[in-house]
Image (tube, rainbow, N blue to C red; front, side):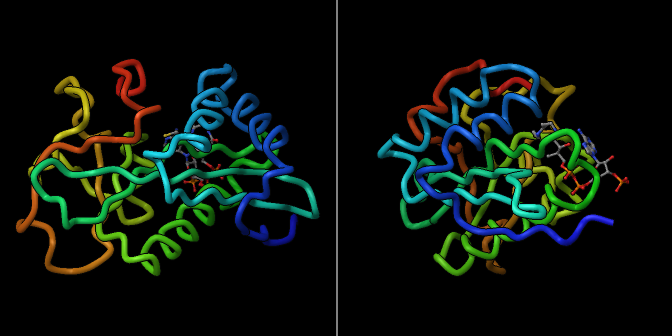
Length: 181
Ligand SMILES: CC(C)(COP(=O)(O)OP(=O)(O)OC[C@H]1O[C@@H](n2cnc3c(N)ncnc32)[C@H](O)[C@@H]1OP(=O)(O)O)[C@@H](O)C(=O)NCCC(=O)NCCS
C-alpha cells in the first residue's frame, strides 16, 4: 500500500512538474495553461498552491485563488481551480487530502467562503454544498442542468444567509469557457 501523501506548498522550481500533472489528469493543455496564468496573475493573489508527494514523487496539485463577491467587499473568498491527481495515483485519497489541506490554509488566512465549479458527487465529500440556492451566482451563468456543480463551503459560521451575490474571479479566470461543466 502506498504511503500517505505529503502535502506542502508548491515551490517555484516545481512549475513544469506540476503542470505535467494537470496535462496527465485532464488529458489536455487547458488547465496547465490556466495554472501558469493564475500563478502570475496579481488579481489571484494571495493564492494557495499545494502539491502532494508520494514516495518523493509529485502526484497531485491544487490551486486556490482570490476572488471577490460583488457588493460584499468585506467578505474574503477564494476559488478552488484546478485540482489534479496523476492518473496512477488517483483513488488513494490524494485529491481529498489536497482539498482539505488547502481549506485549512485558507481558514488560517481568514478566508470565509470557498467556491468550486466541479463534480457534484466529489466535492460534497469535502464539505461543499450547492451555491446557487444559497444566493451565490457564478461568474458566468451555469446551465440549469449543471447547477449542482457550482458549490460553496463556508469556513466560518454565520455567513450563509447573510451574504450573497455574484462571484468575480481572478482575471485569468474571466473567460466563459472556464465556467462550463
Ligand atoms: C477528481 C480527482 C482530482 C480526484 O482525485 P483522487 O485523488 O482520485 O480522489 P480521492 O482519492 O480523494 O477520492 C476518490 C473518490 O472520488 C471519486 N471520484 C473521482 N473522480 C470523480 C469524479 N469526476 N466525479 C465523482 N467522483 C469522483 C472516486 O470514484 C473515488 O470514489 P470512492 O472513494 O467511492 O472509490 C482526480 O480523479 C483527477 O485528477 N481527475 C482528473 C481531473 C479532474 O477532473 N479534476 C477535478 C476538476 S473539478
